[in-house]
Length: 258
Length: 331
Image (cartoon, rainbow over the protein chains, first blue to last red):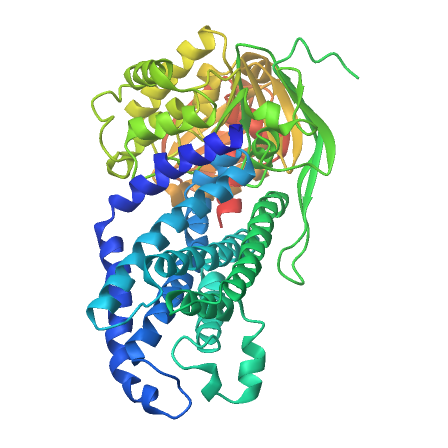
């Protein structure tokens, strides 16, 4: 109860305020997925004509992919805010107050959830405007957004934990750029995994970004296989819980190292 | 167990070694059995050069770090065993600000209060009072990244006072502030102490400790080298200081080399164009000192025989001048 209140205080009292006071950040966060959609939409347009791709237009295929990709891109940077907080004394301020470490993680997750929901909704809107088709209807889209939130949280936990352990901006930038692009390309975001070499498809099966990708796309399509979506969502929720736990534990390691 | 009830802050035998983070780097002994006690409602100053262990002590007492050995209690609460409880009775200001730059001064205080479980009208009134007390009422609706150094420091202290802590930990609260801002901050701190708050402070300004601290500890290389009131520390030094002002820093360096050779001089230090020499009896040593300087034709501006200062105390106990030690560790 106390921890929930504290998480709420940090989330609303700090993160949301910081967000709306930085309009450039909001602008870039919205501009980026639009570029992805337009760029990849034009670049890979011919992909949908390859035999075996399946039915439907490429933009229909691409939109859920960009939703998931944007979610992990944004959330892979959340650790940066911890590193900034270490440098200017803000983290010490929190850690010397009787604040539950879980509340610190929860506030960050809540912030990540809100930004991901807004971003995902806007990407879906633009995709729709560009001609994407969502036969799954509103339910499917809500599930897609929910899935994007889960993968964003899993990634944010990873990023936060990594930031607390390494304490270095450069290390986080390196890890994030090294990890995020391969995970995205190995997820089926741009290309159906039916068209890729079988070893890539095998690797992708262990890729949480692929779980999110697949679950989101199934949910948005006609007559979704809810059982499949449910089990993917379960995996993702577990991944998010594990990284949340690790990120919270990382505070202890951080303090021991100081 | 010793009786902790009487003391607001107790540090006992604190020891800590930092293992080298990079491979091949050596371990650093930050604290080596440091012990002290602070009485409630007093200011206790930790002095010493960078790397002496002051900040490590602060971090341990404010639950940010754990010692390898030793104990600490604040208001009777065991800091190491019950860090959560200790956090609710302390206010800690680190060397860095700690204020969230994109929040206003008021919002920073409200958030801090919220984290301590305060809310509603009571919290709002407390925040307004503190902003008033620290002269920040006018700037309270501005984002703190626009604050001057002095304003931010006052905000830092105000923020950690929201929950009325029993003990305040201030790590170099006045570093980088102009004299007026330093005086302003100390005048508020004096009021807090008068109202019963205990303050542990580190500072680079010996004269601040001299003026405001009930007790002073000089720490070097993780150990206590001297402790007492400013007067006790100075009285504990027998002898005088001969303070010689020269034409410039270069002359001062040369003068010190001469003074080292004078038998009556037991220690010496340079600060800018001023050289201080410790002697047993100032009046007797003066002729020898002057003739030594005369021999090398140094331009002497003034010579005074002075009571020991805190810098002399530091020099005596560590074999280095406070400012010399500062320079060494900064290099």
